[in-house]
Image 1: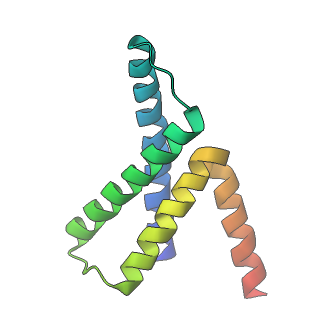
Image 2: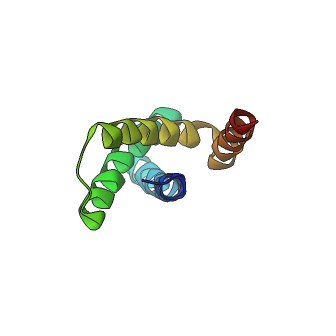
Length: 103
């Protein structure tokens, strides 16, 4: 998987996390249930990361290997981070890291 594909998956998970989290919050408010917004966003992002990665594996006929496991772990962690601090901040940090590592 290329870095571009990985970032695309991260973008997809980040957008879907926002949408699903808001939908779940609305449902919980209607049910008069209390929740922790950051925990909810984190759990939703982890679940969506796994679902999106499985969807990617199926659609590309990729084989689940050690490399794909590492990519899945990175996707889960970065999507969780993006749900907490925002997608733009995560991309900015990755870009800075990538720029400094090539110098």
